[in-house]
Image (tube, rainbow, N blue to C red; front, top):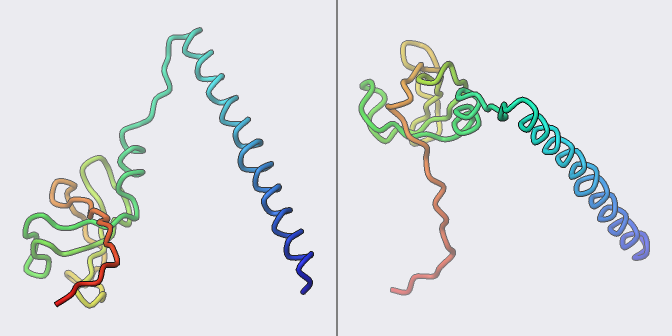
Amino acid sequence: MPVGEVIFGFIAEVISYIIFELIIEGIGRLFRKIYYWVRKLLTGKERETPELELIENRYLLKKVIVISDLHELLPKGTRGIVMEVINEHSFYVEFEDSYGKPILVNGEKRMKINRSKVMLESNRRTHNTVYSK
């Protein structure tokens, strides 16, 4: 493959990204903001985001940790993934053991868990450091 084709392909990708992502989607976001601003001026209604939607954005398909013992198979510190948000207070969570195998409770992979019994797992950054002994 000639070097010119590679360079030309790269430049075309960058230009198409700039045109599509930045300009077209930016114009769409601008129109949406103008619409909600005008609607607020005329009707006084602000844009509402339902509580359930905020909870789904925060918890759905995220890793959680059990903060208190729930079951003999689910001690404190067990990790799982939120598979479905039922309501503001409950989730369906799939748990896995330390080897990555799913934990079955009463033959079910998914468990209904109260939101107050779990917390989001923090994504701590680890640095590649060399420790000298």
